[in-house]
Length: 535
Image: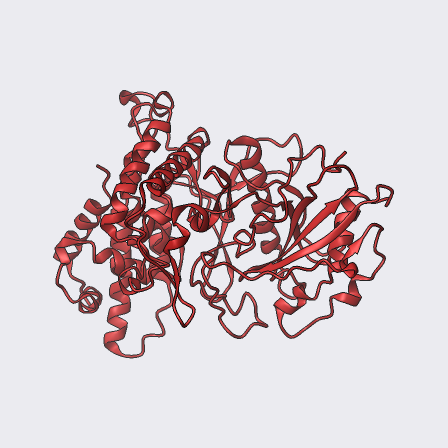
């Protein structure tokens, strides 16, 4: 009998899993803050997880064991000058020892554990292992051990441990309380008093591979240039068979996201969940933002959208602009702050979920969950196109309803990416033109409306904001991410017909001049409101 008889069956080793082994945040082109990782001097620009990673497969006898390993952790985790080398230096034998300490601590079951693959992204190091208990089952049980690269005594803080704990609890909450398929967490530790001497998560290996490589594009669309750049041609002219697969995939995805309508909360913030079997429902507490200098900044919770937006507006004004040395540069920086604050004021202040129309004004505001990175590389499908897992829920928070689960997935709002226009030549990143994305947006919106329970929604429909979520999502990212704030504000300005043809750098300078530009500020707020308004 399988040693994991009480756990979900794990897939065979030949199933792709490299996509999940990428960064926890999975934000493309996000620089690694030097202060967060002080021993790493360069700002690593990790390739998008849409590019297949190389893994090293190891199955030699030195990585195989059926007894408890007695090696000393200190002998295999010598300190190095590079924080990633510290984690990479964890010997395979310790990963094997970790698995055996949990599944065969007495060494009586004849279990053979093998390390079969290593992989890494910007933020995590992952090791895939197989467990063979010599039964008649041809399929070995498989799992992944993930270790954060900043999980070293010199870098790791209580705040990092809290984020780590929150990620694990979120994944278990989704696994137990929703219909959304997520990897099963078997064991975890957010400290250093363990076999590895580092924080870790052990989870199931997901069946299938990403929708990016296995569904949304035919493999014959993939082309490689002589310098190694991936070009996807013909994505906007799919065969009837591929078009059918895409639409079915969107319908299935919309149905899974609609399940989140059953989870409402009274504040904006992170889920705080106790780690025990009889834990009460989650409370909403603070979350962390990453500052430009790498610090974790405690934020929230917020009891209303108005409170949240007011806080974000203050963050915009408090951003350090001391880098501006010339007078015009300073005016432009101040003008960008003013425009960002106007954008913040234009977002909806409150969206209730009333039971009846008469109760709209007095109904308490409620907040919902939203996947922080719902993109193709984080959605796994099997050979038939069925969604087998949705990954990377790190950073999951409750948000205003207009930014919640009913938003378009990221791959359908690429036209609102901050660098969309200047990267059109990179067709692997932006393979579909805006007019080619539009039918899929409308289809997803239609499927989502079908999947939502109208009896639960009352007179308010979360899907009312779906088609506007490209612009709203760019605005929210500008509020939450200091890395993308300026670029996203610039991107949204290009959507406004009221400033069509105006030199945008000059516009920013004009807004930053002493005395401001009152009539233009009124115009801009109205323009942003129209951009964010649902139809």
